[in-house]
Amino acid sequence: MASLRLLILLLASCCLPVFSVNDNNPTSEEQEKQKKAADTCKAFGQACGRCLSTGLTSVPFAGGALSGGINAIQEAYPVKDKVDGVSSDVQLANVKLDTLKIGTRWETWAAGAYQKPVSNIEISWLKYIELERGLKTSSTEKESLKNKFFTYYSQCEDSTLLLHRFLTAKPTSITENLGDLLANKLGCDEKEITEHFLYLNQLMFKGNYLNEMYDKLKGANTDARVVSGRNIASQSALALAKSHQRCVSHNAAHIERDIIELIDDDNVRSEIEKKVLAFLTEKYNRYDWLVAAFTTFFSKQRPKSLKKHVVRGFIKVERGIVTVAVAKQPKGTHTMAAAVKKAIESCSLREKSFCSDVEPKLMECQESVHGKRLSETYTAVHTFVKKNRQGATNAKEAPKEEPDNVEPPQTPNVYVGKCGKVEGIGRRYFIVLIKSDEEIMGVNPCTKTNCGSGKCVEPTKFIAMCECKYPQYGERCEKTLETYGTELKREVGSSQELPPNPDVSRSNNQNKQPQPSTSRSNHPQPRETNLNNPNPHGTLKIADNRRKHGRRFSSQRDWFDLRAE
Image 1 (cartoon, rainbow, N blue to C red):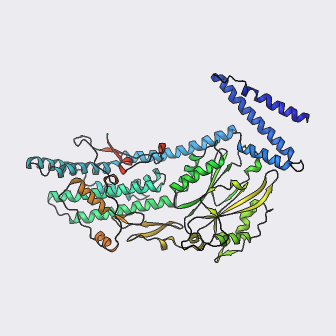
Image 2: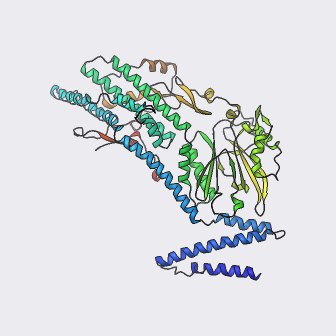
Image 3: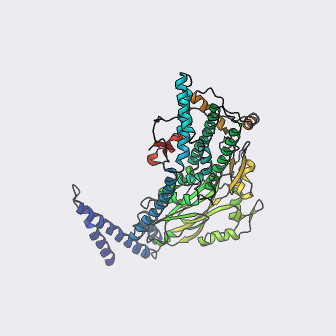
C-alpha cells in the first residue's frame, strides 16, 4: 500500500507544473514548460498504467476487468513517441516528393510540347469564329479576315497530327504518352479522367472541323481530309481509352498515396477509418471496401496486446504509429453470403483457437459453396480486439438464409466470428469480407455490360469497361461527339454544313440513345483573347485533382487553362 501511495505522489508531483502556470496571460516560455510537463505527466501516467494493469491481472474476480479498463484508457490516449513522430513525417514527405515528381513531369511537357497543338487549335477556333461572323461585311473586310485566318492557320494546320502523336506515343518512344501522364497526374481519379479525356476528344473533333473548313474556304477537295481526320481521331480516342484502362488496372500505388495523406496520428482510429472509407468509396467507386485502422506493431505504443491485428488480403499502409489496412473487391450481386456463412461455421473454428490460425484454417477447410472451395469465396480476413473495432465498411453482416428478393441485393456482406482471448482484454474477433456472386462463380463481367456499338473489355479481374467506336463516348457508349459538332456550328453561326459521318448515322438509327445536354456550360466556350497577340501560344496548365477547400471545378476550361504568356 505504501508503494502505491508513493507512486501516486510521484505522479502528482510531476503533473504539478501543468496546473501552476498563469492561465490569464502565460508567456511563450511558460507555455513551453507547461507542454513539456504535460508530456512528462502523460508518459508517467502511461508507465503507471502498465504497472497497474500487470499487477491487477492476478487479482481474483475484478482484477481482469480493472486491467482491461486501464488498457482501454491507454489505447484511447496514447503517448506519441518521438521516433514514431519522425517516422510519420518522413513517410508523408516521401509521398509528397513522389507527387512533386509526377507534377514536375507533367508541367515539363504541358508547358512545352503538349500546349502547342492545344493552344493552336483553340486560338485558330477563335480566329475562325471572327472570320465566320465577318463574312456578311464588305468584300474588302471579308478578304482581310480570310487572309488573316489563312496566314495563321497555314502554320498550324498539322496540330491534330501533333496531338495524335502525343496521345498514341508508345512506351518505347522518347515522347511521353499524354493520356498516361495526365491520368497519373490526376491520381487515377476516374471522374476527372473522364472529363479531361472528353475535352481532348472534343479538341481533336474541333481540329478536324477546322481543317475541313480551311480546305473548303480554299476551294480544295475535302474528302481525303475527312477520311484522314476521322482515322486519327478514332486512333486517339482508342489510345485515351487504353490509358484509362491502365489506370484502373494499376491503381494500388495511387490508393496507398491517398491513404497516407489521410492518416492523422492524433485522430481516433475509428474516425480515420470513416474518413478513409468515405474517400475511397467516392474516388474508387467500382469497388466495395473494408477499412481497418490500428496501432502500428513496431511502434513504441503500448500495450502490445492491443496491437495484435492479423490481416490477409489487405493493402497495408503505415504512417508513424497508425497502420491503415484496406481490402477492396469489385461490386456485384450478393445472394450467396448465407451459404458462405454456413460453410465458415462448419470449419471447426473454435472460440479458443488462436486468431492467427483463423485464415490458415479457412484456407484448408474442405467446405464448398455452389461447387467452389470456401477459400475462393472471400476477399480478406482481419482479426482484432473488441467487437466494435471491426473496421469501417459499407457491408452488412451475412444473413442466415439466402434472400428471396426479386432483385438480387447489391450490398456486400461480411461474417464476424470469435477467436481466442487476451488476458485482461477479453474476447477477440475476426471479420471476413465475402465476395460477390460473380466473383465466386467466375462470371465474366462483360456478359452483363451493354456497350452499344462499342466493345466491352476487362482491364482487371471482374471490372468491365467499354471501348467506344469513334465518335461515340460515355460509360456505355451512349453519347456522340456529333452533338458537340452541332454545338460548334451553333456557336459560330456558320453557314457551312458539318461533314456527314455515315457510320454514326447508321449507329444512331439502330440504337436510339439519349443525347447529352447541349447547354453551353458543358462545352468549352471561346475565351476573350487578344487575337493580335504577337505571341499567341499559351501555356497548358492543369489544376491538381485534390479538392482544395472542398471546391470542385465546373467545366473543362477550369482544368485546361490557356493563358497568354
